[in-house]
Amino acid sequence: MNKLTGIILNVLVMIMIISCNQSTKKSEQIIKEPKGSFEAVFIGVNDTIIPDDISSEVEIDRRLLRNLNLTKDSDFIGEKRNFYMHAMGSIAIEDAQFYHFKVTSSGGIKFKINNKDVVANTKIHRKETNFAKAYVDSGSAIFEVEYFSGTHKPHIFLEWSRDGENFETLPDELFSNLDAFEVQAMETSEISSEESLQSDNILTDEEKKNGWKLLFDGNTTNGWHTFNKPGTIGRKWKAKDGMLVFEGRKRFEFYVAGRKIELGTTNKVLDGGEDIVTDDAYENFELTLEWKISEAGNNGIFYTVQENEKYDECWKTSPEMQVLDNNRHKDGLIYKHRSGDLYDLMAFKPIGVKPQGEWNKVRIIKNKGKVEHWLNNIKGVSFDLNSEEWKEMISKSKFAHLKDFANPGPGKIGFQDHDNLVSFKNIKIKIIE
Image (cartoon, rainbow, N blue to C red; front, side):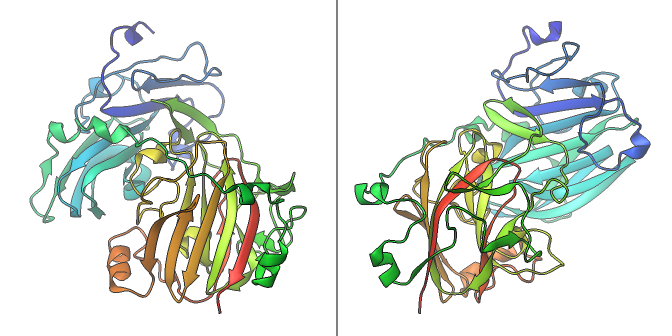
C-alpha cells in the first residue's frame, strides 16, 4: 500500500488488474466473475474511487504508462502472474483512414479502438503475434486493453502501419492526449408546459385523430417480447409505476476518473434479461418516447430490428440511438457513443441530453429510408439508409459484416439489455402513409 503515496501522476492510461486464485486451465476467456478470494491492483488516475467492498489486503498502485509496449515485469506488477488487466486511454489520430495493428502478447488479450474489437486472442497462449485492420476517425481514439497473463511472463507489444507492411511502434506523444477525457458539458432543452402537463401513457383526442398508437399501456408489457422469442419476456422487464423498466443487474464495478467500468460475464437468459422488441414491425413511422437512465447507465433504442436465430441481439440488425449517462459511463469518452448518437456512426450535434436522472424526450422519424434522431426537441442526426454515403459509412464500421443490418423496409422497435437500470414511458408511434 506504500506505493500509493507519491505515485499519483497525470493520466495517460487507466488500468485495473485482478489476480484470481483460479486455475488458468479452466480460464479461456479474459473476463471472469470473481470467485473466492482475489487481489486487485488498480493502476489509475488521481481521483480513482476504490470500491468499499474490496478486501483490505488489496494492493493499490498508480503509475504513468507512456505507451502500450509492456515487456518487462516492472511494466506490470513485478513477478505477479495470473493477473487481469483492464487498460483505457486515448491515442491522437491525425488522419481518418484504415490502420493496420500488430499486437504481440503472451497470455490472453483483447484490444479495442472506440469499443470495436481489433484483436481478440483470448485463450491463454505463449507469445503470439496478431494482425488486424480497422478504420479510425481523426481526433481522440479511445482504446481499451483487456489482458490476462495466466502463468506466462506478461508481455504486450503494440505496433501499427498505414500500408500493412511497414510497422512501427506508436510514438509516445500520441498517448499524451488527455483532452480526450474532457467531455463537453451537457446542454438542456425545455419540454413545453403543454407536454409536461399531459398524463403519462395516454393518447389525447388530437393524437388519436392523427393516427397515434400506444406501444406501452403503462400497466403491462403487452405488445413486447424477448428478441427471437415471441410470446415471452424476461422477468427483469416490468411495467412498474407507469414505466417500462429494465431492472438491471449487479456486476463487479469500479470508477476511474469518475467513469464506471463493469467487469464479469452475465447469463442474460438465466437472469431473465435479454433485449426486447415490439410484436409488430413498422416501416415508415414517427416514434416518440421518454427515457431515464441510472447513474453511469447505458442502453439503446433500435428501430429496424429483424428477428432471426442467427442473431442474438438487436444491434446486429438495427441502428441504435444511444441512451447513456454521458458524464459517468466510460462510453461518454467516445465520440459517437453518447446520448442521441447514431451509435458508432454519427454524433448527435449539438449535445441535447439532460443531466442524468431526468427524463429525456425522443423522437425518431423513419420514412422511405430517411431517418432523423431528435432529443428534447433538438434534431441532431439525419441520414438516408438508401444513400451511397450510408453504404460507405457502414463499410468502414464494425457493422460491415452484418448482412441484415439497417434494412430500410419493415422492422421492429427494440430496447436493450445492457445490464443497467433504465426506464421508458409514453412510447407512441404513428404510421406515415
